[in-house]
Length: 99
Image 1 (spheres, rainbow, N blue to C red):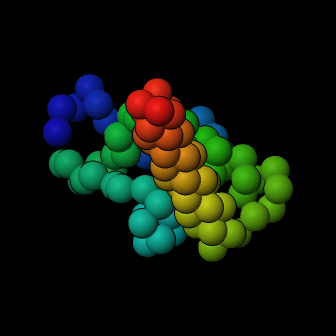
Image 2: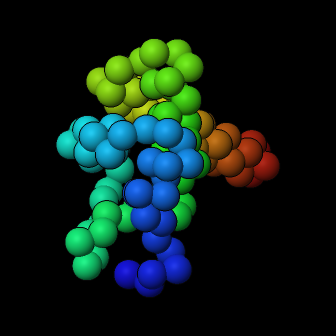
């Protein structure tokens, strides 16, 4: 993986004032993927937005890691259902146009 696409967890720990164990627990729950290179842990830059949401849920709303896991699973399910609804609407429009 290209180094430009990665962000060191140590930087995120400092910036968001969270402990490395927070990220370790998220990794255990498969909420984030941690890449290790030269004994430094990284996450993909595209996931920083999700990580920021997780930190806010944890710090501001006092939601534990399992709650964060549940919330993100539900958000993922909502995204998939919205995509399915859009696809079904498009198919329905095609059938309506043929009538």
